[in-house]
Image: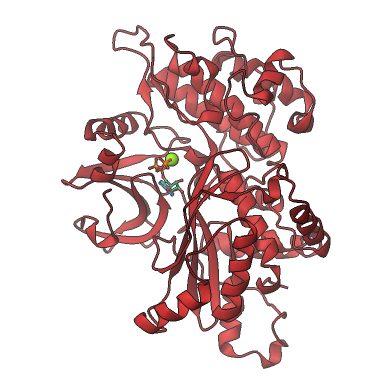
Amino acid sequence: MSTFCEEDLPKIKDVIIGETIGQGSFGIVKSARIKDSNQNNIFAIKFIHLPSANDKGITEREISREVSIHMKCSNHPNILKFIDCNVTNKFLWMVLEMADGGDLFDKIEPDYGVDSHIAQFYFQQLIRALDYLHNTCGIAHRDIKPENILLDKDGNLKLADFGLASSFKRKDGTMRLSHDQRGSPPYMAPEILTLNSPYHANITDIWSVGVLLFVLLAGQVPWELPVNEDSDYNAFIKNNGNINAGPWSKIKLDQLNLLRKILHSDPSKRATLTTLKSHRWFLKKNMYANSKGLCKDPDLLLKNLLSNLHVSLTNENYEIFTQNMNNDNAHNKVISTQPVTNDLAELMHGSNSISNDNDGPFISHTQVKNKSIMTQQENNWIQYINNDIANLQFINEDNMTYLQSQLISNTHKKKLLFNPVKLTKFYTIHSMNILLTILEQALELSGVKFKSELYENFLKLEDKLGPKNVFPLAINLKLSDCRGGTLSGLVSIINYEGELKIIQFERKSGDPLEWRRFFKKIALLCRDIILIPN
Ligand code: ATP
Ligand code: MG
């Protein structure tokens, strides 16, 4: 099994490599800038480790195809810009536009979704990106899902990750049919799964847009796989899409009408881009869009996106949750994450962790101590965490409006321009002993099994590396979610200063909505140690 570490990454002349901003299947995505250039001129570099890709049966030729396709079709405001690329014998790297707004999936609340104006805004942008991709470039994306949709600093959608894309039109204009089964199961069109029958890859993209729209509106996928054996899919097909139960009941008439046109199992009857562009919900004026279809009020968009994200730490929620746990209700989504057998988790030094990403102007905070007797250090911590929009998800609605307007205007001026902020994290000022004991209990209650006690493990590492060098720490996790999928990622513990620590949940693979469900569960179980503004 090939692996690599930070030191192996190639040095690029006149380029300063910054923080890790994402993990891919075979590599890592870093922020970067040109030496001596404007601090605001940041871009992203996706390094693909060729030996790791080869291990998974992916050839250099296939990777070069991602590059050549992306290069060809990035001249659209809703497609991530491709800037440059190069290759050494171990790495291929792509210089890409930096998507400062981070991942779209990070901002979708499980079982809730985003509000319908936001869904419409992103639907319009995605349809325009796809129209360009299909009709101008002759390229099908083939992996449309929330993980591959990024946002820029103004909240505009950027379609990314052309790893599975292919050209469906020949130079002479004739259509090239596809045969292979690729994509992400819940987003795959049914015809891809029908053996021995060629299909049009561009038409499968339309289907994936439908599933994505459903996810935006409902906060969950409509089914695991579009096959008759899948009971959710079966119910949808049997009723000709006239379904009003479960998550479908959340969807309003206009959108339901549109979804039925898109999610037609017969590709020849499925809505085309032309029909979608003339659908009334597509044409309806959107409150966030300017005349070019780009975001005209990023503060408002971000504020409304964030107001749907909520981690409830109330007694009531805690009791419901622990009661469910006692009942051992296997169907209860909140408690059903399970460890993948034989995988014992362990606390380790170091991580590929996405670094902390805040500094800047602040708002006041009075929870830890009376303001007048707070030490300078405590003041710094509070200022630091108050500047992180991730904290908004823990705040109850009464405090929300004021804090949001403060935070968002500060964050926007200062920080969203640089770092995609990951929202699955919390802060604590408790000692490592308390933190690790509570975290261990929470993870164990969710089914994680450990090689050894976390705190004992920490003391050994501290002994070996010294108190200064022991951070960052990481616990690698592999879980199976309630729907049978595998989730992998890490919980990293970053020491900001003194006792202030950031506990960050970084998904590596698996359904991002399930990862957020997992994070919310652990946060609820750790609620006594979470530091929350006001
Ligand atoms: P996978 O195969 O697991 O989907 P991948 O190897 O195709 O991963 P990407 O999806 O391109 O890699 O990137 C992985 C993650 O890195 C993204 O989900 C995102 O969080 C981050 N990322 C990638 N490119 C950018 C960018 N240009 N700006 C900001 N973040 C980025
Ligand atoms: Mg990806």
